[in-house]
Structures are given as C-alpha cells and as structure tokens.
Image 1 (tube, one colour):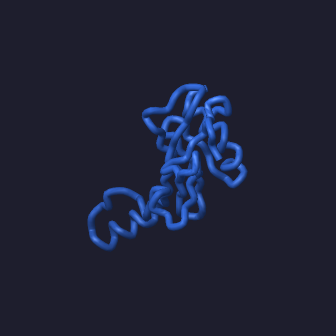
Image 2 (cartoon, helix red, strand yellow):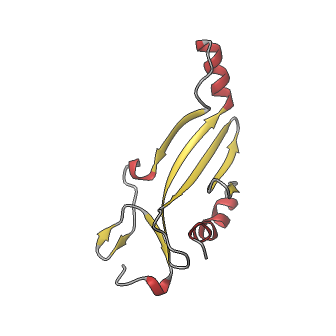
Image 3 (tube, rainbow, N blue to C red):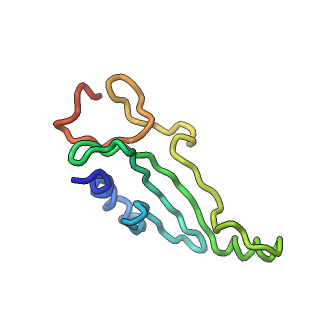
Length: 120
C-alpha cells in the first residue's frame, strides 16, 4: 500500500463521521461550517516507503469568502487569499507526538507492524 493510502485508510472514516470530505489530489479534508471552510492537510515525508511506513505532519486552516468580501470593502483591494488563519501541528501547544524507542517523534507515523522494532 502506498504511504498516502495508509494515511487516508487510517483516518478517512473518522473524519467523514464529523462532516469532512476527502480531496485525494491535495491529501486534505475539508468541511463547511456556516461561512467558514475548515481544512486539515496531510504532508508526507519524502522518505516514506511503500508497504512499510507513512510519516507525515498535519496543518489546519480556516478559509472564508465572507472575509475576502469584507477585506475588499474595507481596504479597496483584493486579499491575497481567503485564509483567516492556519497552523502546523508542531506549533500547537501541548500537541502530543508518538514516543518510539523512548524518544518523542517530530511527526506522526503509520508503520507496518512487521517494520516496528522496539517501539513503545
């Protein structure tokens, strides 16, 4: 299984249950809440190996077309985009990454059971 497929197989159902839709070409999930669009994006490590490991990190963002309209009216120019804000997981206070071999990892991992050695 390809690393991207390991990621989506592991989380797609859970996020769908809370209203997120999957976009395979951007490896992200989004949902609309009132005038806002919430986005969860997954970024893969270039060293991932098929059928072995999918290491990734996540980013979270909120978009609003209403914000763009307000910005245009307020400043008489178009904003760069509809983005209200975003963050990458390592910038979120008290975010808990997994501990493997007694050491806290800097990214998330989905690893085939046969490939895990001495992991906690």
